[in-house]
Image (cartoon, rainbow, N blue to C red):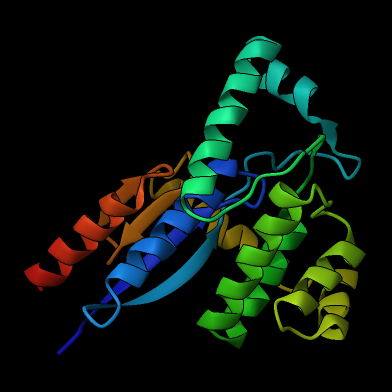
Length: 215
């Protein structure tokens, strides 16, 4: 009998390493197909919860938040592009950082529609922002991305026009913070095993195989 593992993927649409980590996890799950079954949930985390609707220039944001030089930032971007390419994710040009709260509201809704719908929306959001530089705080962008993921665009717009699922997302964000998650991606397996960061596929594959065998 195939062992079922619960995976909580705590992440933010604005996080490039979350795109790398999800790509790596997906590659690992492909390798484990038929050997390990998973119940995958995407959980909200905001890197910049106070970000205004106008966003911020990405170079200014990174300098203010982390310090460093343009050369250092370019080296980091090159490393991320390389790691992304290795797991099938293509990074494009991003010029601004945006607020992602509404994107998390749509992801919560997608989770209610089913695991496959939530997974598809997560991938579509990551590609829209990190691959195409689109604004994940723009309701029309979000509705369009929802449609690309196979969800109902009119329903997405309805959610975005109000505050539906806002309380649920905030409660989830607080829950993970209280559990000690302060950086992402954070991948929590069966509520007790933590894998941090954009690890390569073999790390996920090995961990999931070991946990499934431990039963």
